[in-house]
Length: 100
Image 1 (cartoon, helix red, strand yellow):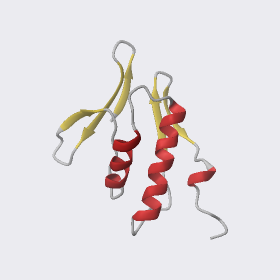
Image 2 (spheres, one colour):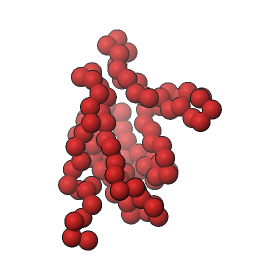
Image 3 (cartoon, one colour):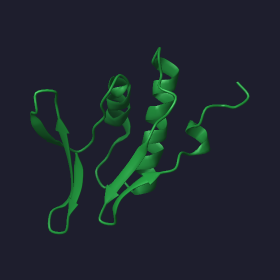
Image 4 (cartoon, one colour):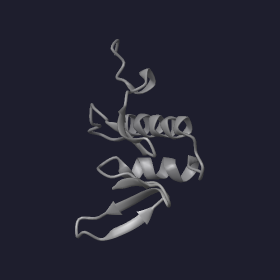
């Protein structure tokens, strides 16, 4: 769960299957989350720009596609910030190769 408060700023929370709530600075869920979390541990730093965060998401998606046996064909990237919540269009680098 993500949100933005004018006084506090951005917040991100992880809620597990028994409804335990944890405040986190980065997160991923699903079958590919282990690959993403490892990538985030390596490349995440506080104060990232949106562009840096999108680059990191690209790396996560490419890692999932190369290592997960049943990699999902579609990914949805959402940005939540002071301007609201919105979907972000995929970059060409993370779209499936049409020639393959």
